[in-house]
Image 1 (tube, rainbow, N blue to C red):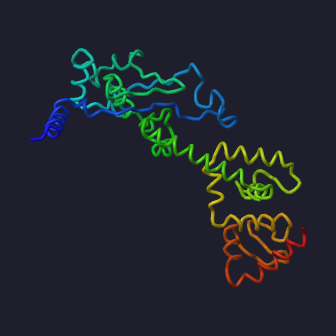
Image 2: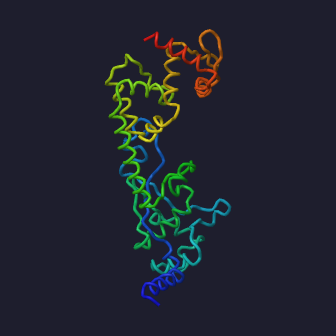
Image 3: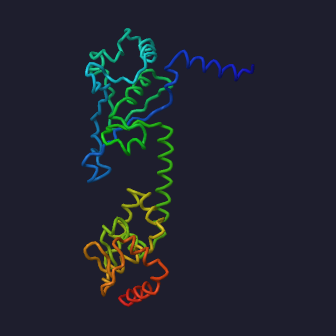
Length: 294
C-alpha cells in the first residue's frame, strides 16, 4: 500500500475514534442584526452594536423542558470535549444548568466579530457546536435571509473571503459603468431606479445627480447593475417621460393615454402593450408627442 493511502486510512481512523476531528475549518462569527442607526447611516458605529459592546450567546434552555439546555452535542462529542478540556465528567451535560448559566461560559461576540479556528482550538470547536445549535445564530447568508431573529451570523471564513472578493468585483464593475455615463444617462437612470424616488429631472443640478447616483453605486452596486441589466430599462425610461409630460396619465391605479384610452393597470403591463406589434402605431404617436415637448 502506498504511503499516501496509508496516511489517508490513518486519518479516517482518527476521525472515527475522535468525533472532534470532524469539527474543523475556520469560521467567522459576526453581529448581523441591523439597528435603527443603520437606516440613518450604514457606516454608523451602532449600525449593529456599538464598539465595546458584546453579544452573548449561551446554550438556550429547551422550550419543552426548561431543565434541559440545547448544547448541540452528541454523547460522544460531550465526552470527548470534557476529556480534551480537562473538565469533570458530566460538566457539559445538557442537565448541568449551573455550568451553562455561568457567564464565564457565554460566547462573547464583539462588534468586529470572532474567528473560530476549529482546526487547532478545542474551545472554538465547542463554541462552533453551541452556535450551530442556537436559534439566535444564522448559519450562512442564505439562512440569514430567512432567519428574522438572528443576532449573529456564523459563516465559513473561506466563503466570506469569496463573498468579499465578488463584492469588490461587483463594485468595480458598477463604478466602470458609472464613469461611462453621460449626464442624460444618469438622469434617465434615476427616473427609473426605485420607482423614481430620487425625483430628478433636466433642471436638477448636475452635482446633486452625480452625488445621488454615486451613493447608489457605493451602497448597492449590485442593484445599480441589475437596473441596467433589466431588459425593459429603456421602456421604463420612456414611460416615465410620457408620464412626466402627462401624455400618459395614471388614475385610480390604471394608466390612460390622454384622451381616455386605457393602456394598462401596471407599468409592466403598459410596457408590454407598447411593445406589442398592434401597438406600434400608437407608440410612434406617443413618442412624436413627447419629442414635440422638447
